[in-house]
Length: 366
Ligand SMILES: [Zn+2]
Image 1 (cartoon, rainbow, N blue to C red):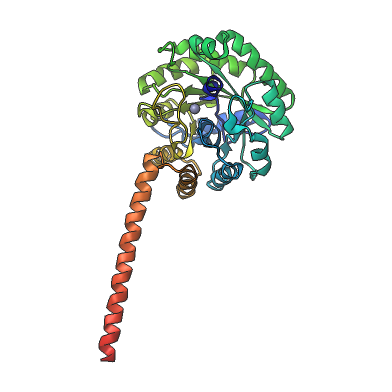
Image 2 (image 1 turned 90 degrees about the horizontal axis):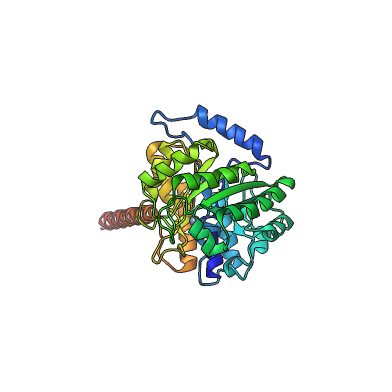
C-alpha cells in the first residue's frame, strides 16, 4: 500500500487552459506565452494547477469524508483556479484515501472553463475515469531507475511502455493526458538524478501524446541550481510552453525553485492549498508548495494568475480545520494573523467610539 502511494506522489499536474482538444489548446497557450513575457523574461501570466485534493489528501491517514473533499474542490473552483486535480482512479488497496473517486467526481461542481483532471496510473484507472465522465487524466513516470525498480519492479523504459498504453487509450477517447516525471531532480534511493535522464522521460511522455509534462521534485530536495539544470536539459527536447513544475517543500526550496523555473519561462505551476500533503519518501517531509505561497510570489512579480487569494485562504482554513491541523502555508498564516490583528484594532476603535458617544450622551442628559 505504501509503495503504491509512493508511486502516486509527484504524479499529478495539470493546466488551466486545457481543453478537450489538447493540440489546439497547446497551440493557443504557446502563442500567448510568447506574446506575453515580462521584461525579466518571466511569463506575464501563470496557470496554477491545484493538486491539494489528490496529491495533498492521498497520504492522509485519517478517513476524510467525501463531502469534505467535494467542498474543498468547490471552494477552489470558486477561488478562480482553472485546473484542479480532483482525485485518483487507483486501486483502493493502494490508496484507500481516494477510494471514493467516483463519488467525488459525481458530487463536485464542474464549472465551465475549469479542468478537473484525475490521476490514472493504469488502464483500469482510465476505465474508471472514463465511466465517471472525466475528460482529462494524468499519468506519471519516474526519472530514476532505482525508484522505478523499487516501486513498480521494472525499468524506466518498461514503465514508459505501460504508460503509453494508457495515453494511447485515453487519446483514442479524445481525453487529454498530462504527464508527470517524478523524481526529476532527486531520488530517495539513488540520490542524484541525471538531468538528461529526467529530460528523456519527459520527452517520452510528450512524444506519446501528453499535452503537457510536469517535472516533479517529488521529494523536495532540489535547489534552484539543480532545477535549472534539469529544466534546461528538458527544454532541449520539449518546448517550455508544454512544461510545468511540481515542487515539494521539504528543504524549504520550493518557492526559490519555482522562481528559477519562471525565469526560464515555465508558465504552469503545481501547488497544493494549505501546503497539504506529506511526502512518503522522506520522513518529516512537507507536502507540495502551498498555493497561497505561490500566489504571493506571483503577485510580487506582477504575474497574472486570475485567482482570489481571499477565496483560497477560505479554502485553506476550511481544509486545515477539517483535518484538525495548523495551516501549512506560511503566507496563509501571515495574512490571517495580520487580518486578525486588524480586526482586533478595528473592534477596539469601535468600542472606544461607542464609549465616547455614550459618555457624551450622558453629559448632554446631565
Ligand atoms: Zn507531489
